[in-house]
Length: 187
Image (cartoon, rainbow, N blue to C red; front, top):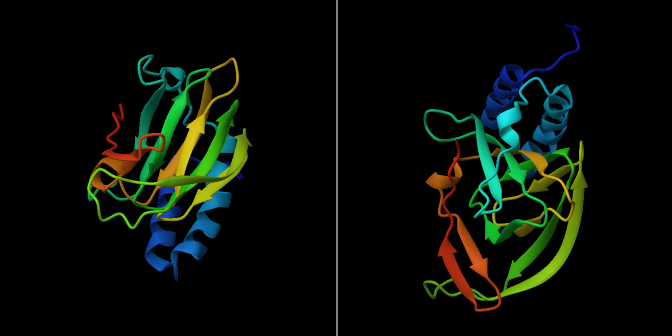
């Protein structure tokens, strides 16, 4: 093993230090992104079972790390061909790095003020496709949808400032102006 290798344990240690010392969320994201790319490039954490996905949902989530207080949630998502997730937020910051294949991220803006329970008006803004090694940073409040437009299962590495099931995360149905809770099963 080379002295330049960078494993998941080192990444988690660096992540803890960055979160404790970052001046603000923008600087945190700027510092986490290259480290996430570095640990993804090493691939020592990658397991065959991470390619499994729920055929009904169209994706799967494999847990790599979560802090005891539910902060610093790190997972790998698998995306079945032609599948993805509807618009959603995380209620925390996120860094996503492509591992294998590609995923299209579509960004949305909320138009209403969020005061009506179960109601949301969204407008599509932009999109970005990420492939292996490419990074996407999502500040708190970002809304995006994801789709794997390839013919193979794709994988992406995700780092969040909090376990997603311990936030007020929501998914949206823009065609019917609906907002729903969004809970994941991280195995």
